[in-house]
Amino acid sequence: MLAAQVLVNAAVLGCLYACIAIGFSLVWGVLNVINLIHGSLIVLGAYLAWGLYQWIGVLPWYVLVVAAPLFFAIGYLLQRLLLNKVITAPVLVTLTLTFGLDLILNNAMIYFFKADYRKLTLVPSLGSISLGGVVVPVDRVIATAFALVLTGLLYLLLRRSRVGRAVVAVRLDHDAAVLMGVDVKSIYAIAFGLGAALAGCAGVLMALIFPISPLTSSAYLGKAFVVCVLGGLGSVSGALVGGLALALVEGVGAVVVGPSYATTLSFLLLIVFLIVRPQGLLGRKGFE
Amino acid sequence: MTRSSIALAVLLAVLALLPLVGGAYALRLGTIACMYAVFALSWNIVGGFLGYPSFATAAFFGFGAYATGVLMTLGVPLPLALVATLITCLLAASVLGAVLLRLRGHYFAIASLSLVEVLREVVNNATDLTGGGMGLNIPLASNSSVLGDALFFFYAMWIVLALTAAMVIAVSASKLGFGLACIRQNETAANMVGLNTTLYKSIAFGLSACFVGVAGGIYAAWVHYIDPSDVFDILYSVKPIVMALIGGLGSPLGVVCGALVYLGLEEVVWRNYIQIHSGLLGLLVVLLLLFLPHGLVSLRTRLFRRKAGHA
Image (cartoon, rainbow over all chains, first blue to last red; front, side, top):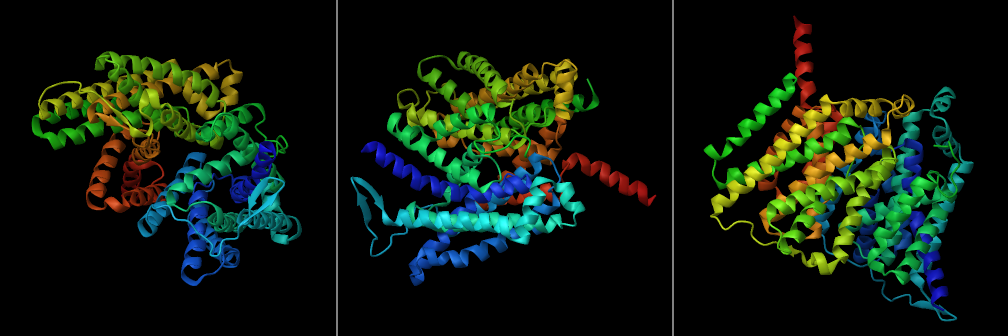
């Protein structure tokens, strides 16, 4: 019974991890930028959901409609105005720039919202489903469903729409995309905007489940990174597989060695993967 | 010795004269200045010479602080504890470097970043040895007066800085430094012409760690109390990068100047706007990267060129 519960928990958590990671993976894959502000954007999304529920009682899943365009605009402008200026510089520069932006956003959140942990508690509570001894809270099921919907939407967007094809083209071969007349700078801004929108939406969903505090941003960022490495960069299915794999390892690890070693465990997994299979579970070699 | 090495030596000598003019506050600032300069110089070996974006400084700082702290609570005298810390840091970082520096670019940056988180978690969980989240009280190293204590720790930190500077200058003039520059420019090619890149990177990582560890040890003995979230603060990893960016990547004199300028800025911000100091640090980073990506060193040539253009 414990095994079944661990598996179900891992499946639920894995979908949420995937949702956290796809935006990060998209930006990394297309722009070759490690977006360190991703974690803080997730937390900002969570505050948006929390604030709207507290003030006017909007349920978090309706907040998604507001969060997506709002965060897209934030991301688009960040890329247009700041990141595009240094996009060709070495890794250290882009990485440090997003770190600086993260410091600013995180400090602003601590300043305005305080570092206290808050929890979005739905009234009345949605309760939980019990199926043959395996218990799953309903809010988690809803969050997971929306996480899958978001992931599916991104997949469709990249597959079917003209802009999506352009984003994939820039990722596959930057120079060839330029020759085909793709406006790379604006595709960069769109990709970063999409990444930010996904971060914001993921944050809205996280607010349903986890406590909210600016201090949690680095944990989200760490998860996103490990998921990307496990699943392979820049592909939607890769993020899904990576998320499930990480959640499974964490769940089993928590039972075997105890939950206080979660970070150490995922770090060891990360190092092993980077050395043994740097392209990830689903990644193809030479595809970066 | 090149001209910039001599300038660096002169700068350090001037710094050593600080106790003649300043009181306890100046000594405290001087000690932190030496500590920051050690960070910046050490980071420069991996970040500047080797060109790998390392975020591991906080890991070594915390590791050193805890190594010395634990040894001192076991009754080992400070100097001996520091030497032990130096050797442990050098060996541990060399082994880690051989593994971590196989990763490149983003992967290495994040792996070094997570090293900090992992060490913090390990220290937090090893409650028996380190006191875990309750922190570790460290016995007093000397029984002298407040000012005597301040003087002692200032010179201790200054000696570490002098050793680090000597090491960096020696490395940059040696075959090792040349090899590191080769790896930075083209690692594959360096490997092809017979350079043992793994060995070189491993040594570089070890050297960039050992003095940071010792500085951490002195810091621990200086403040008498450390806890994981204090010494494994990720900002310790970022500050040296900012200092190097202020001063100019790769030049030892530049990064030491960067450390001093940064400390000045930090002290002003910290004293006046404590609630938003990390946001202001972020703003500084963003502005530097956008407008002065090659540091203060580049300012001189830029101004000079502009003047020449006018003439």
